[in-house]
Length: 381
Ligand code: SOE
Image 1: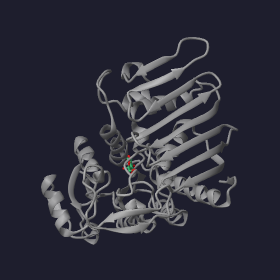
Image 2: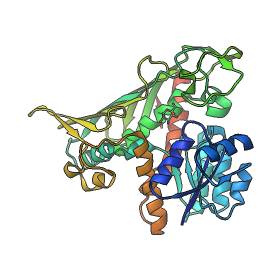
Image 3: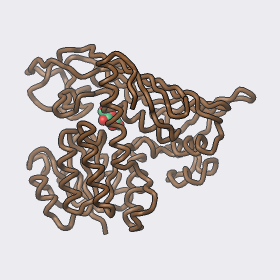
């Protein structure tokens, strides 16, 4: 039996715990930002071990896989310690703070070929995303010419909204791009298989000073809480929004918009992939519909239904047509891919999950995006 531990008890840690349990992976315990938080989380999720610190997980021989869901500045050291201790790693995105760190992790993963080094790009695992990929890769939409879309949210719209991601020392030098833009670039790259060769970026911070509550708040939790009575004013130097133009390896063009301050857009990640024969459009808030645009016949909407989908995409459906699958299911399907791979034990087989190499590519793109913005010009990737 493979035992997993989840590190982090904020918004996303419990999502990992729940998804692992749904596929029968034993979650041995959890680690929060303090021993008290570990205790509370272990109790509320009915887990046997509340770890006092990270070293206790590393030292526990019963732990085989570690899910890292803590702020980005912890990813390098935690992933490193885990691999060196012979444990599989499933790390939240972005994989680390900059390309030097992610390159180190790629090398370490290469030196431990019998361990999984996965990055949590869950959006790849929506059934219709898998189907869209199969359509594009089999030539059904012709040659890809354009990609368009982005990722819009509103949870950081007010100057009273606060989260650790606003602090570059914890989140990294990009915020909207690093946190949600990387999801979009990974998703579109996964579907099209195209490499970004050049880009031009424009980033902007609309809220240069924010009120940081004295009491820490989990991601998204601020929207439900009243504005803090006690706060510190903090100068913000990471972007609220970004727009990026891309050139791809085959000559295709792309545009991506990201924003954490777009009122009404909750978690709107969408793409339009335009081929020489047809267009595909999808969004994560309506993930059971794939729009297929045509010129020579009426457009179609494919409603998620395994009986109408590619063999590969069928594998990533758990339920028949009309039975929706969403956010939590995408985590479940990602972990199915990871743990089926571990249980099969053939580590030279192609990896069906986003790897440290994929995580590294995303962080390189973030670094280039910041560079392009600072230079006010196109940069090569
Ligand atoms: C916050 O922007 C966040 O939780 C991201 O970090 C996640 O990756 C995304 O799924 C939802 O929004």
